[in-house]
Amino acid sequence: MFSKFATRREFLNYGKISLLFLLNSCSNIPNKVKIALQNSFYPESFKDTIPKDWKQEKINFESIQLQKNKKTIFNSDFTLINDGWITSIDFAEFEKINEYPLIENLDKRSIDFLGSFNPNQRSKLFPIGVVPYTIIIKNNKELINSARTSWDFLLSKKLTGKIIFPQSPRIILSIAQKINSSNSLRKLKNQAMLFNDKNMLNWLINSDACVAIVPYSLCSKYLKIDPRLSLVFPSQGVPLMWHFLLSRSNLKNTILIKWIKSLENKSIVDKLSSQGWYLPFNSDYVQSKYKSDMFPISGPSEKCWENSWSFPVLTNEQKINIENLWNEFLTP
Image 1 (cartoon, rainbow, N blue to C red):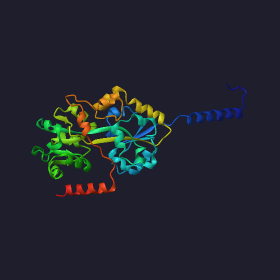
Image 2 (cartoon, rainbow, N blue to C red; image 1 turned 90 degrees about the vertical axis):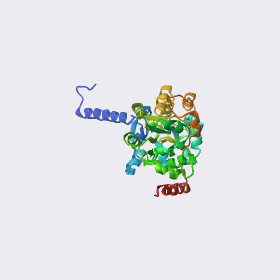
Image 3 (tube, helix red, strand yellow; image 1 turned 120 degrees about the vertical axis):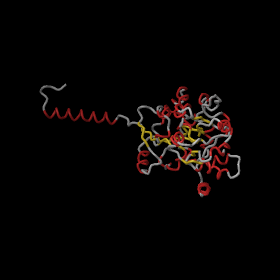
């Protein structure tokens, strides 16, 4: 307490000390954890698991503002990315993440897929979700039974010009390879209404299209509100979209592990899988979600999971081959 006889100089000195104390206290407040993600790729149930005191920074790999993206990622502690955009990031900017105890949580499927990456990439990628593609059929119950077994149904004459495909040559080429017909890729072209990733469900609902091939996590909400739509996972397998976590901070592994561990809560696992997001972890309860044969279909069957396929990073030669096949596919 100030003495009533304190001089003006003493008063100012007390003020300086108080200011220094305040500044020192502020400097000890930890910076808010930042996680960068492309918002549209993640179901609400997943985004809700991110700790409330973390700041979610939006990025868009499709955006022409690549410099802004890079700055956001550089200033974030963690980044979420799917396998389709892996080549868009600079791995030199990230720390090793699979040296953490986290690697012990991964299941065989995710470990096998990590093995397809080079050692530098592999050490910096932590699989945090896998999303199966699904077939959405509108107003055509007759197609459902044939779609449940294989992709051959896509060549039905009833579907000529009425299928919405993903805007991914690699996915379409992989599906064509599953179809038991000569020149299947060329035949698929006749079936296409359009190739679209952003608004495929709007197109399906509001056009003459009958079928769309969509990541499960992006369509689950539509199935609940539109009775015309049916969900099918062929037992022949489906393409898989992987999501990875990358870290720029090797000092925050404790809070990262705490978040990852929280995802294995049974109620969270249930919510995530109901919205098409599957955790690639080895716990018994998580793995039970890969063995569901419930009816009506709530996800891929165990057989479908066994036959499904992922997309490793392409070599330059593979890229050229796919580009050539795709250009040939698009040629009238």
